[in-house]
Image (cartoon, rainbow, N blue to C red):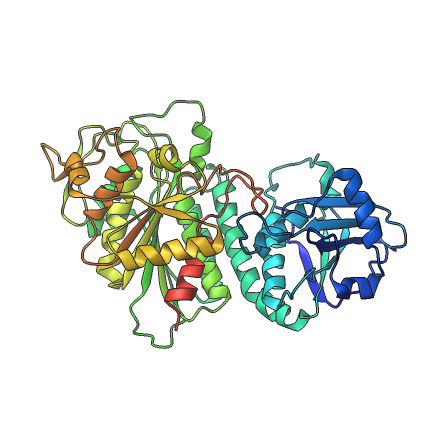
Length: 499
């Protein structure tokens, strides 16, 4: 993996041969502070803008090489004019957009001043977060780095010039903790399955203890004693043993405060089992642990920024493989809750893992709320594409908090229905329930299945099949594994559950 992007905050200063980034609106005028520092190059911008039809709109840039009158290698003029919807400027996305205009090893001076109004230290810190997120690379297995922007593997170096440098430095500490968590989640999803199997995943989660997170790992013997036969059933066909990992961060003022528990599906590789998947695209099933990866990344972020909250992460780690001992369609499993499950399709395995993990989390930690994340169904991609995650909940307040956190971070969710008519679809003739309700409403019946393992706890289920892996590249995500959910849940906890 390429090293972290180098970012510093300071006052506006001469670029001295570096690239210089300035911001303009539709009138093409840089901020007065920029003009005072570097001189009046508005005529240069206007001339170049006319030639290239640049109008200062957001997500557009004008690149002027060897600009006359400036000791800079490049002048990159970035538009920030409001769009038709007049939405507030997203400084995280702006940072990612600017990073995308740079080349490896280049030194960049960013004149972070608003063309009109004021951008404060928090805005500068958000901009820096965007730089960090866009600067992620997963190239540890490449022996040759052929991309022209690599510049010997070096990332651009940024100096963000702002009149609020001190406040920006302070605010950036929390933002960079978020970036570390997102990077960790991305790394886990991007790792190949021969490297990241359940025991190795558990070992990487153990590294959180260096940040003060209390980590506990249950092996198959311990899970067997607890009656986790649904989770263990999924892993029966694999040569790799299953694990269940808990990670507790208690930064709350009252150490007796009930925790928020976040549960993640961690199927390190999903072949489909006996109900084997088609060969095409099966390599992507290394990412079927995107929910668990998010939980580990979230706990890293919370501990790194010393969140004043009590949060527990629980991840069920398995491989779903076909062999002579693999579970079969028609098998009946007895879950930790005592409820029995008829296996209709062994490729509907994630909900079996979550069934025991959710029950264990409630029994062990008595949470005030529980949220699970899972790359659970292809049906949610059919419904929502890869732009939003599906949200299912038994609690309107919790659902609304998640929606608000999603809107604030750009990791958006869309609430989907639950109801008795859907629940009936998973009734079984031979057991308490079956593990799939058929083709119609597939993401909903999967959520109904999970709800049968929720007691009276406020609960939300996030189906992240379309967002956690293979999601479209964006200004802040160049990676196949997106780290989706770390920013969303960090914001939820910061807004609603910190002291």
